[in-house]
Length: 536
Image 1 (cartoon, rainbow, N blue to C red):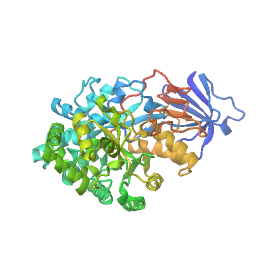
Image 2 (cartoon, rainbow, N blue to C red; image 1 turned 90 degrees about the vertical axis):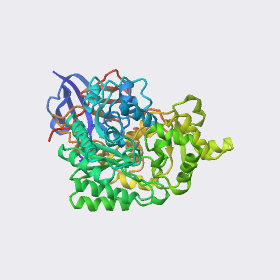
Image 3 (tube, rainbow, N blue to C red; image 1 turned 135 degrees about the horizontal axis):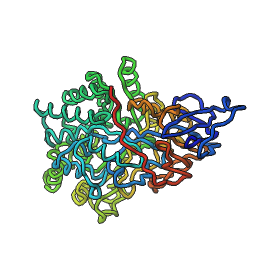
């Protein structure tokens, strides 16, 4: 007898087609039978060892978080309800060009400092890997949800070239090609880059193109955080489209937003650019989160020259008064490339987390508010945070536009990504709420997308980008990574005031046919594993 039958579910299967009522039978981690209501009329209904009454619930494929920063969280937190409770059954890690493989001892120490604001210091993690394959093997020991991995171009450059702002030598470029090829051969699904983060931002287009050629050979995709989301954003998008087309590499645009005052109402211009490339045969997808503020580290705002040489060199410059004044001038007057070419507005920079508990009083306040309270300049406050917190401070950046968010999420190549940073006292609520916020706010309350369209954006479309032949749809023979939610009540619990509240209206989540969320509670099941790139 089969393991489980889910009875009388309203199946939204991920295809975008209208829902239907059915019994869905699961065994051995896969969907073995789907009996639609019409077919079941007058017939004996399927039976199993366990039956779950899904009356009033939607059954859909598990959601795919195309932009996640859970690289260490999955290892340190077996519960991981931040994602499991949202119905996320697969996360894509290694984002924005910086992560923890491939590394040697030197670059591992450097990267841990550079992205402590994203993932924590890692002092509570046993870094018993160095290669991409070893990291994926570590995930295979059992994690809360499935995870795929992108080779991080900035980490690769740190390993082959260092943190200097210079062109790679021919030998160094060959080394980077080999590292990318090895990571893909070991199971990575593509290449990421963070072109406003050091050292990845030091790479010229010619270097990136060569790495993307390697990615194309292995059937992966390129996922850039491109050079600007502010001044010059459209030019930065066009640069990535042209680069990927020249390399013959599929392109997935990370957190594809149009931010800052210079881009208010300009989302249609971005989509026109993409539509022209798609019509010409380009392979392009994108992801967004359904919120207006962004989130990153305070150190990311610094100009690239201030970060050259790595975290230790950046801290040394901030300690020096003359160098610090030069940083301030670039931030406040010129427009730092780290702040997307736009002069920083300190009243939009809210501190969301610190690694030093002595700095907790700054959390939840903008830099401007803290500076005013202390009777000092905003840069004095920001500099103190950067130095005392050793670059580990995280921020919310309130620079987005609701009309741009809605316009982009309607596009047919759109997918969902949380960009969720789980660190900090008050992280961005997208880390805990992205997927139910799509379903509750943008589907049920606003009608920006139909339910069937939205589920397709969150399931089948990302699975197709990842080239996963048996995920992303409710189909016989497919993996039983599934979500049951109530379309009348599903909603993000997380808010900017209380960002760690779990969602409502998602009572059941299954991975590999096993309940990781049951009756709204996290079980002790660790059914997640590394999802490796499918061979060409």
